[in-house]
Length: 178
Image (tube, rainbow, N blue to C red):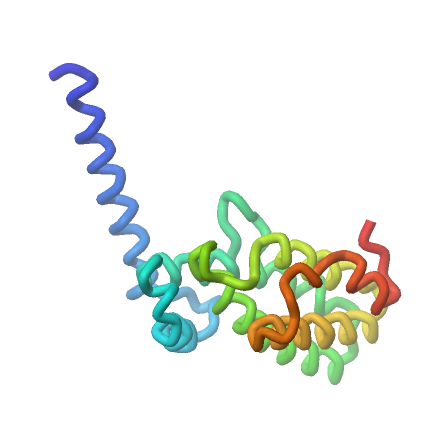
């Protein structure tokens, strides 16, 4: 058999293997990611996204958001030690809860198809940078509160995505984003 005839067979095999690996996300949900049902409900509420993306694709992006992957090695879970570092017990508990809620809000939107989602990867990068740049514990708490407010307003259509930029956070928080 010539190499040209083998190419379609190899591609079919690779696609089949990828589909099998991806569908595992439905049955082997990671313990490091909030409950799958939260995200399945979000997926089922967005008919426009369902027309463009399967539930397996959506959930795969959810896991990637939390755990990272080849193209973005740092996931949301990797931010936890940085965000919680040097906080007292009360602050740590407050921030952990806020961070968990914020993660669900962001992940549920970011994991959608690019043509549908409001939150993009540039926003993720910016927000991660803001949280890391906030060196003082109270500034970190203020940063998470501001980001949460912005995410809620984005999702409600009260804040234009174009308004999410470095200047917005540098002007509201004592941080250096350079």
